[in-house]
Amino acid sequence: MATVVERLPIEPLYLWAGLTGLTGLAVLMSSTVSLLAGVGYFFHWLMILAGLSMILGMAWAVRHPDSTDVSTSGYQLGFLVVCAVVVVGASLQQILALA
Image (cartoon, rainbow, N blue to C red):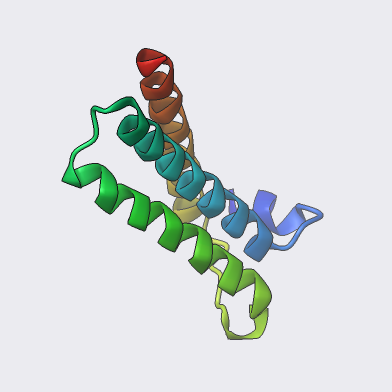
């Protein structure tokens, strides 16, 4: 997997930032929809803060690439991909259930 990442035409930083931003956006959206639907709890407010912090952290890392050390480890990237898929899938399921 590490050789696949090294051969991609994009920087690993942008790959990591995109996956982190996607995860943060999914968490932010599902928690916001839950609160708007009236089934939100204190946990959802914390998840909104977590989603915002992931998006802001991703934006900061892209804006300041010199201070960011991004690992090209296949295991870490694979774990991040799995997390992004699970969070986006769970968020979509939650949003569709509330609709």
